[in-house]
Image 1 (spheres, each protein chain N blue to C red):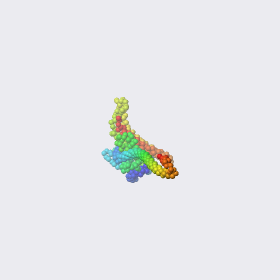
Image 2 (cartoon, each protein chain N blue to C red):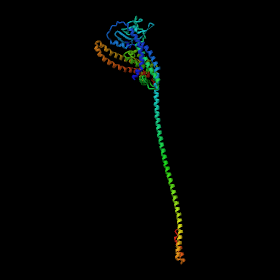
Image 3 (cartoon, rainbow over the protein chains, first blue to last red):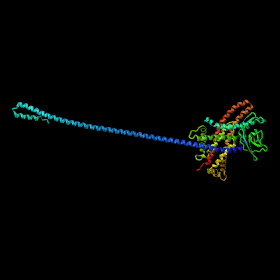
Length: 164
Length: 360
């Protein structure tokens, strides 16, 4: 059966040509193909790596942003608290000052009043003296005769008029 | 993907067809003086099928009436210290002898060239139909893969395109799931060029063998000489890359009772036989699978003519069924074309893996 008898010519040509084909393809086809595939795989690998890294960084960035926000909030709260304190202290000092001023004004007023009072008393005393003199004049006019008794009476009256 | 395949691969096909169109012209011209002492024999399916499956000295394309249309191929003969080179058309399909040689048309040596006087068979190194088919396929494979290789350097860092994207999955499949998986991460790169070449050579030739007309149709991967050479390549590479533990495993198989090795070295004999049966099985498997596929398809075609000889009407009727079965077989053969290429490559890779395996 020729079907299962290998022909010597075909064996020879096949051996030569197949060896040549392996060499040609190894050199001009498989080498660049494998190199290209490997490089592409590496590029993909690196890209994935970089993406992962970027994601991680984003996470960190987000975290630090939140931290910053939190700090800012705290700062604001602190500022507000301080401002409130300052406001309160300002009001407090203002009130104290106002009180003092009021006290001072009242004191002044009281002094004035005292002064006015004394002046009034003095005035009154003078007028009283004048009145007393008038009264004395009238009494004198009526009872000038009884001189001693009248004088005694006048003095007593004056003493009585004394206010303080 | 199919569209881009067609676009890219058209060029080499056109070149090859153009080259052979020239040969065609020569052949048809030489037919005009064909002698017409044909005796119209009855249709013989057996010899028709065998003629289609075996090698031949001319590439027969068709027969119109009494006229054979075929591509003549160079005949290279060496006998008694004399080298003769001439075209196979000189034989006029076996009707004439040339330079003392004759194309035997019947008997034991049918289809072979013999020395007319003595009947001896000279050393035949002719470019036969299978050699021509092999060279065509090799040119095709080289053109395709070198252009793909160029695509990787020219379009660096870009997505694969056209032919490159069509064949890249196959290349990756062979690299990752066949070679790397069988040989291991460390050593697979050394064997990759051979195994990739092997896979694509078998695959392309299986497919070309399914094309029923020129330049396909040669039963190259179904030829035992071709599968033998490929199996020998695998055998030689396995033997030369085998490490110490591989040979120790053969001579002194571990995990086997001592009385199987001494005094009768039964296990070493079995293991040594295994070394040779592995490539032998590779050779026979591919040969048998591809040849069987061709024979079945040709058998279905023969049915049409067998019935047609009885009655043309029945022949036409049977042709519908035959074609349907042949189409089915053709589809099956497409699958077989891939599977056999895959199996040959996978087993070769496994043998390399076994030969280089490190035992701890």
